Length: 164
Image (tube, rainbow, N blue to C red):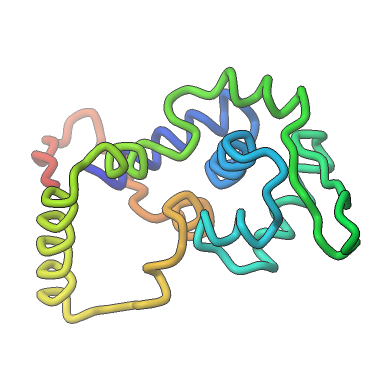
């Protein structure tokens, strides 16, 4: 239910604002800290520098962000949200970072520890531990893998109860 809900929100945001969930998150991060550098954005989103750069290229082509070299060191590129980007942010349905990161950000340390323990147990029982997935934003996982896509049940077929 958590993954499906997050996926539906990212899909709705994409349809409403015309940008991906990752782009919405990036816009929110840049708006939160105007003038941040590319590596700071990548770190905030836990994505590889080349992924960050490719995403920013797409966003710049749509005039959602601008890049400026304002320091004496011309290698440093600072990021700013354009008025078009601000307009997109203003019309996003739900939190720009996504529902799951937003919900987690509103939990206290004890609650986060409980969630972490429960998820660790699930991974242990699944006999799987893809450490590389730990640093991939949920929006990217949902966009690129199509994770958690449930086929729509037939009208006559009984619905199974959803479990977390």
